[in-house]
Image (cartoon, rainbow, N blue to C red; front, side, top):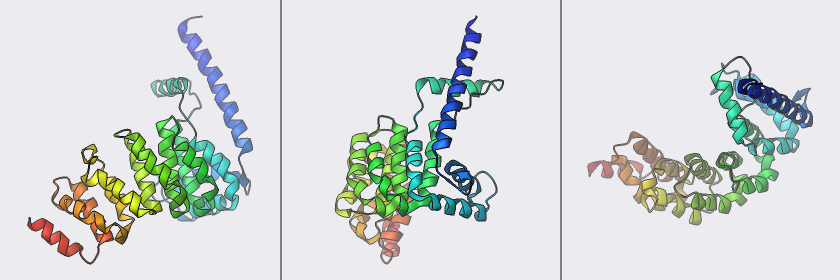
Length: 276
C-alpha cells in the first residue's frame, strides 16, 4: 500500500472518528421545540444583519428566544465550544480539505465553534452568569485561541462578569506584546464590564500613552475606555493628541472616546487640539 493510500485510509478513519464525536456531542446537547442548541445557534448566526445571508430578524429573534428558553442547560455545550482546540493532526486534515475536493473530512476549525459560542452567550447574556468562573479559568488556557474566545464571551456578559476583571487584567499583563486577538478581546471585555475604573483605566492608558504605546493597541484601548464614560476623565489628556494623529483609525477612536467621556468639553478640546 503506497503512501497516498495510507494517508487516504488515515483520513477515512479520522472522518469516521470525527463523525462519531459529532454524533455523540449532538445527542448530549439540549434542545428546544425539536431542534438542538447548535441548530438554533446556526439559525441565529445565519439571519442576523451582519451575517453572510440576507438578514431575517424574525428568524434571528426566534433563535435567540429558543436559546434563552434552553437557558443554563446550554452552558455546558457552550463552554465545550469555547474549549475547542485544533490539534496538529486536525490542522493537517483541515489543510488536506483545502487542497482537494474529492474526499472531504467532516471537520470544522476551532474558530467555527468559538464563533458559535459567542452567538450562544450573546443570546443568553445575564442568564450565562454561572459560566463566568469557567470562562475565567479558560483565560489561562495554553491555547491562545481559547483564551481569546473566553475573553470574547465574557465581553458579551458585560457587568454580569464583574468578577472576571482581575483575571482579564492578569491576561493583559501575562500576554505582553503577544497575540493580538487575546489582547483586544480582553480589552473589549474590560470595557463591556466597565467595573473597577481605578484599576482598569490606568492599565488601559498604558496602551494609549504609556510603556505599552509602541505595541499599537491604542485603538482598542480607547474603545474600551469609551465604555467607562465620565469615569475615564483622567484619560482625556492622553487621548487628545490622537486627534492630530496621521492614522485615521486613531483619530476616529479618539474622537469617539472624547465624545463619550467628556461630551460637554469635547468640542472645546477638539478645537484646542486641532489648533496646535
